[in-house]
Image 1 (cartoon, helix red, strand yellow):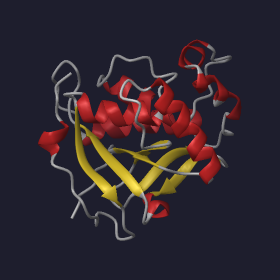
Image 2 (cartoon, rainbow, N blue to C red):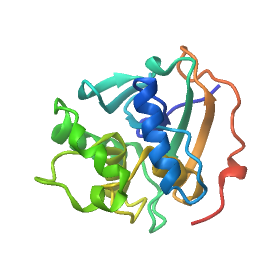
Image 3 (cartoon, rainbow, N blue to C red):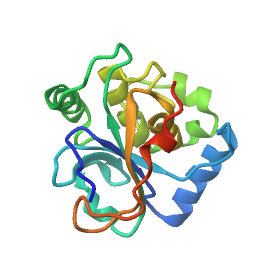
Length: 197
């Protein structure tokens, strides 16, 4: 049984099959290993599986329940790059700031084509207030001090890779997610995912 925690993040596949496949194709093209599993990312805001996500219908609070029967990866920010442990309150404070900034905004569809050429997504931001799902997660990790990567331009595949390779993160689950929160199969071996940073 998986015990999710407040402030965990996740990667999943979401949206129409065509949209997901287009995102995955672009991610694979730019990925160093030419592989990509995930087309979406979000933040877990409760132990019951409540989430904060940028979805096609807008940036809003949602639930992990919608990913029942789908491949999912749950990642836990454990410490900052400075080596400081990250406690629940710090994580909650950071994602609450993002909720205040982004909750209720329209999904920034105009940014999706920019991710076909990642440098464009990094540097073209207009008012700087629009962010796709993985960029919001990237901002969360950046504000926690877990990453030094520029949050804008990050893809769900980048978030997945960060969770796998960064010493500040721990992969607590990767596999098929089931309706009962915290119940899943194919628990990953965390040691296999750690390669340092």
